[in-house]
Image (cartoon, rainbow, N blue to C red; front, side):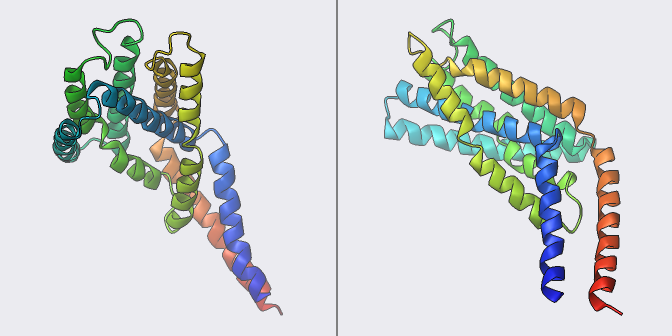
Length: 240
C-alpha cells in the first residue's frame, strides 16, 4: 500500500500535465513561438555567416554588440514593466511582436536583394534589434510558464515543458530545410514564409486564448482537488 500511495500520486500529476499539454492552451502557442524563434535564429545565422564570410574577427565584434544589446534589452524590459506596471503577458506579447517583425524582415529578402539579410549592415542591425526586442523572450517565457503552473507542482510542469520543448525543436529546422530544397532557386530566405506565418499564428493564439486570471482560478481548483485526493488516499492507505 505504501508503494502504491508513493507512486500513484505523481503518476496522476504527470498524466494531468501531459493531457494539458495536448489540449489547446498556452503550451501550444508557447511551443510554436519558441520553435519559430529558434529556427529564425538558425536561418539568420546561416545568412550572416555567408555575408561575413566566416570572418572570425568580425563575428567576434558582432557577438560583442549582440551581448551588449541583450543586456540593455533585458534591463529595459524589466525597467519598463516595473515603472508602468505592465503584466507579464503584455511584455511577452511585445516580445512576440518583435519576433514577427524579425521574420517579416527576413521574408522581404525573398523578393529583393536590397533588404532582408542580404547586406552586412543588416547583420549589425540584427544583433542590436535581437538584443533589444527579442532576447528577453528567454526570461519572460519561463515567467509565463510559472504564471500558468499550479503552486507546489512547478518541478513537474517545468520538466515536461522542457522535455517537449527539446524534442519539438527539430520540427522548424527540418521544415525550413525542406522548403529551401524544394525551391528551384535555392533561396535561403524562403523559410521566412513559414516562420512568419508560424510566429503570427502563435502570437494570435496567445493573445486570444491565454487568460492568466482564469488560469489562476483553475490552478486553485486543481490544487484543492488534488489535496482532497491526497487526504482520501492517505485515509484509504491507513485502513480500518
